[in-house]
Structure formats: structure tokens, C-alpha cells
Length: 275
Ligand SMILES: [Zn+2]
Ligand SMILES: [Zn+2]
Figure 1 (cartoon, rainbow, N blue to C red):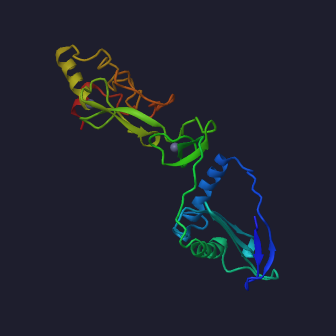
Figure 2: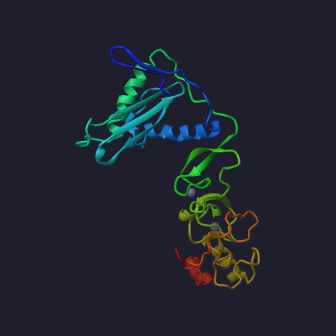
Figure 3: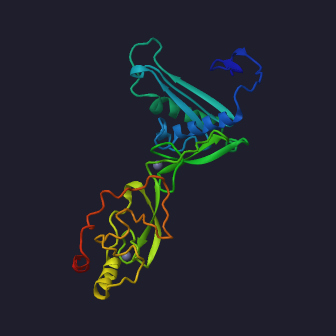
């Protein structure tokens, strides 16, 4: 609130003793401040302040149509500053908006007003939780989402994970680098997002199994390999999602594999001699 209005010569025009009253939940205030801190950095509307005023601060620009008025209201934990720029009689607009004009005036004022005052950070109240949020969907981030941290009042934090960047645990054959089939022995589980999951399936290992079976008439692997279904061990489930015991896949509707059965119709011999 306004405590004193004085002229540039120091003549006091009005004075008021402040009465304090808390009007906002401290947790909400902290979250709003956390958002408004982004205004003066990076891609914020006053982002070109570029670290000014050199201490923890938050603020908000305000620009009216055609840049007629430009506001910036900003604060540190111990000082609030407000800048208004505009014509005395509403003729023409300013040459730029509030971020470019009012914010630097505010920053200059704050820097001078706080000379000698040690920087302090905003105090985080109890009862907040920090969550990684997907930049794209604003849902809880999976391990593969582009994400940023956000605060929530405990109990109001999102519980649903992003479904665009789904974390897929796919068993990969180390020999071929492709999703493993039942014949692959040297495998590891790797994590992919749904959009960049590998397609197809290792044929190299099953080719030897099939060749062995073709030679001897018996299989030396599990019965689901080379069962005469024309290769593609795992039945074309795609994405390596067969039933090997080290196979796991998070997400209840993972790749269906309907688009990945190109190799399915090949005989063991063709598989053996194809590259
Ligand atoms: Zn995501
Ligand atoms: Zn393999």
C-alpha cells in the first residue's frame, strides 16, 4: 500500500501508516510468484531484463492497445515497485510495449533502491510439492518427456502421466540393435518414447535357429520359435513386445505392431540369406 506521497522536492502530500492483513494463502502466493519470476527471464514478456535487478524478483508487464500505456509491477521479497509510462493526454502510443520500456525503468529503480540490501530469496512455505511437468501436455512427465519443474499445493498436483511421450521399455537384441525376438540371447531393456520406438524385429538370431531346425528337423529354442508361422518370432506383436520373461512394457496400449510385419512372410532360407 502507499505509505507516503511526496513531491520531487520532498514535500509530503499524504502519509499513511500501513495496516497489514493476510489476504492470500502463502502457498498460492508462492506459486504465483514462481510463475511471475519467469516473466523477467528467458522467454518472459520482460525476458530481456536478462537477470536484472540481479536478485530474486518477480513481476508482470501490462500493455494497452497500440502501446498507449505500459506498466510494470515487480517485487523482491522486501520491495515492490510499479512503473507507468504513457502520454498525459491519450494521443499516440509508445514506441514499444511494457516489457521493453517499463520493465527496464523498474529494474533500474529496484537496483538503486536496494543498494546495500543483501539479496534474499522468496520463502517457500510448507505444503508445496514439486513435480516434473511435460512441456507439451502439462501432465506429469514420463522419463522421456521434455519437462520443467512446477510447484503445486500438496494434494492438487496432477496424477495422470503424459501419454504423448510414453515411456516404453523394449527388449533390444544387442546383436542386431532391433527389438528382440524369442531367439535372441544377448538382450537388454532400453527406454524409448512412443514416437521414437524402434520398429521391426531382430531376424538375425531366429535365422540361425530356423536354419538349425531346417537342418536337423528340430528346434533348439523355445517352441514359439520357427513354428512354421513364417518367421517373425513373437507373432508380429511388434516393438519386441513378446512374452519373454524379461520383457516389460509400460503403457496399456503400446505399439500394436500391425505396421511391422514386413518380414513375416519369409521362409527360413530367405531369412538366412537376406542381408
Ligand atoms: Zn510428454
Ligand atoms: Zn537377435
